[in-house]
Structure formats: structure tokens, C-alpha cells
Amino acid sequence: MKEFYRRHLPHWQPHSAVFFVTFRLKNSLPYEVIQSLKEERERARIALEKFSESERSLQNYLEERRYFGRWDEYLDKAEFGPRWLSQPDIADVVKEAMRYRDGEVFDLHAFCIMSNHVHVVFETPRKSDYQSDLLPLSKIMQSLKRHTARQANIILGREGAFWQDESYDHVIRDNDEYLRVIHYVLDNPVKAGLASHWDEWQWTYCKPDI
Image 1: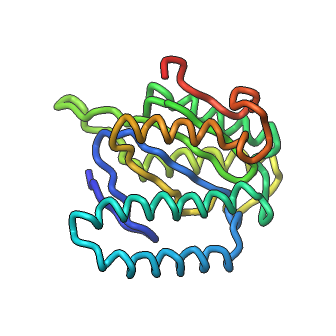
Image 2 (image 1 turned 45 degrees about the horizontal axis):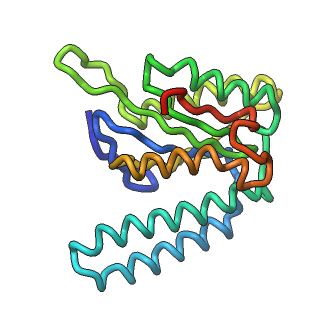
């Protein structure tokens, strides 16, 4: 199993990890915004070259957080592109697909379905000598997106791409980061002004023992 792959962005995918993944609807961000974010990221990459190797790791992490925050802020505004996930029957398709995979493909920790994107936190199982068929993150997301796209398109009476090909994914590395990410996911509809408390949002889930 490959632990590193590259499509539009590099991704590290260890055999077992807690992943924070965000995936969005096709064309949910305008080209101009995507280009602006890419340019910001490139300027930041160049600026990071002045740091020592030991400092660069932390600065890279902080820059990744900043970049994702800007990217997600644009998605939360939902000012461009489709908002199919605001339809309860479409959101239900995504919710049930994630719940169905819980305990089978991954251990589901939390998710939040917004009008044009989804945040999810899950843990992939540890590989043992008796397991040879564990799916890498890329295959997990491919399966989830393919199934939900097919079902959603049937409901919508349309054909064509439903999800954007690329997803944002991040390996959660310690407990402090884990708690911060869980809070971020649950607070997304509150931050967007859609609910006053996270559990008022119908399309949010948090594992009971967290």
C-alpha cells in the first residue's frame, strides 16, 4: 500500500491514522478565488525558505492551517456554485453513507454537512498480519464520493460530476490537535450563523464517547 500519493497536491496516508477530510461540491469555488489562494500559498512557500529546517516544520504547519482557514471561509459563504447539500434528501445520502461505513471501513468520530462541502474526522484501522485488504485514504474517499454522487444525481435528475475531484486531508498528530479539529468541525454551522449550538444542526455528528 502506498503511503504517499500525488494528484494536484501531495498527500501523506499512513496505514493507520486519524484523518480530518474536507470535500466539496464541483465548482463550489470560482476560478479567481482558487488562483488567489494558490498565489498566496506560493508566496508563503517562498517566505518559508528563510527559516531553518527545524523551524520550517512548525511554520509549514501554521501556514497549512491558515491556508485551509481561508479556503473554508470562502466555502462557508456559499456565494458561488451549487448548494445541493442544503437539500435534506441529498444531505441524508451523504450522512447515511458515512454512518454505513462506520465500523466497517473506518471509525467515524465526527462530521458536519454544509450546503456545499463536508467535514469529516475518522480513524482508519491498524493493519495486522491478518489484514491485507485495508483501503488507503484515497480509495476510501473515492468509494464514498462515487456512491454519494450516483445517489445524489438520481435524486437531482442530473448527470455529470457532483464532487470536486480533490479533497483536503490532514493527519491529526496529537490529542490537542484532535480536540481542536473536532471543535472546528462541530462549530462550523455555528460560525456560519446557521445554528446557535452545534447539536442544533441536523447534519452534524459527534461520536458519543468523545
